[in-house]
Image (cartoon, rainbow, N blue to C red; front, side, top):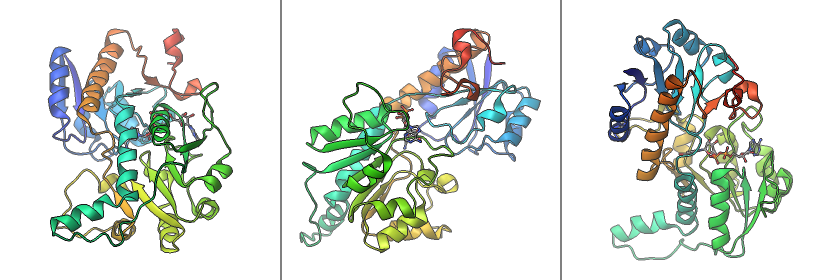
Length: 345
Ligand code: NAI
């Protein structure tokens, strides 16, 4: 029986993980707390830890996991910016779920965008109070607008397909443009200055952190709509707020926020929010915030559990080999050399 410490458990995680775990002789120790230096001890006696986006898997945590004999860090997410993959090398193997439903995230980005541009959030509140006035609800047509997509991987491409369905003109920037994709790639500068809507679909790395900062916003069109369903750290939230206050940014749709770790995923109603920046953003009429829910569809939850359980099983059954391993030694980090039977460690 493989024992797995499952950190930051939410009610919606349990049914699918329990089902797949039982099928694969895996015992989950469901913990509500997040993984960090104070809680890592709870993984003692386990073979693996299963973590989510706001667990802290830094060098100190990895050192402790190594000491406790935990061999595998299984992310139940695609993004892995919260794991110090370099520190894990030689100590623990790291696996993730490369794709569980790119549709879920791309569709949520569109949902946010339509809600914002057509003021659905305002209309919903108004009609519930029998206020049928249309004042202030004027939107704009998607058709004919230019949308700039940053990051044209799995999610970015689905987002592009949907935008094309609306008759939008799509331009894109990617550090590694896909050849023969039919996508019109431009420089980041050009994308920023030409787009009516900008949607972020690239990972958070040292290079992309705060790629949307004051200077990037300065180069954007007045009234630009910014959508971020990727990672909060891609945007300098203070600069975004300034851009909104200066009427430069027309609207922002945020499913992620740089300091979300201690805020999102919990019911904080009735409490005083200590994050002034987030409070101010939420108070803006042209900002919509959802709390990292873009992935949350029934299909995605099922795929996450199935792939995570298969990753763990595959690692322990195949002598440490798993296709979904992340290894910083292998360049693009998603393709560990072990796949080619050259074991990294
Ligand atoms: P992917 O790996 O398929 O695509 C990422 C793309 O970004 C690739 O084309 C890559 O070349 C590009 N890229 C890498 N560095 C770049 C840079 N410096 N500048 C511009 N582009 C760069 O990833 P996928 O599955 O499309 O996911 C994208 C992001 O969405 C993830 O990194 C994750 O942070 C986020 N995500 C958010 C979820 C949510 O619930 N809000 C759920 C799942 C993913």
